[in-house]
Length: 151
Image (tube, rainbow, N blue to C red; front, side):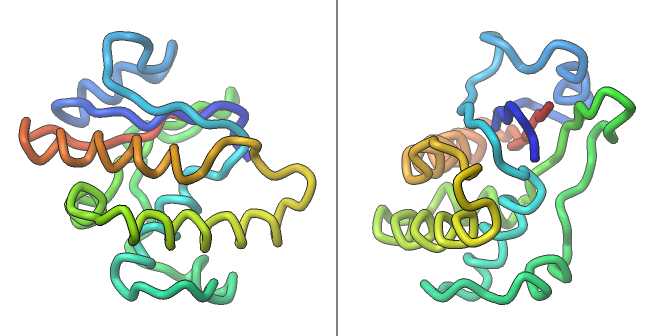
């Protein structure tokens, strides 16, 4: 589980990779959350938009999801990684209605509670999704892409 996760907007993979050592910081429009698995979250969101449902799919189905988020910088011994969100997910988040984001937040929260129990993040998951959706809409307007940095 990542201690700190920052979803951020960058113009390209090279720029996103440059954040590896210090994180995106104030130079990038971003949304921060804590104590989640960013790759699992990204896969969960992507799966939801491909087949919207309030029902939480089995964990095996989530782990088998393809495409899994791709590394821009792979984790080294320090655990820091930068992932690129799939373009189709960025598009879906940018176009998502409030109702869809609410349903996804509920489903995501249900999965996190089942997996992490008391260790679940205390972030407002709907606020995180709304922030990432705002970044996704901005990516569509500017031609940028969405990434996650985590430690």
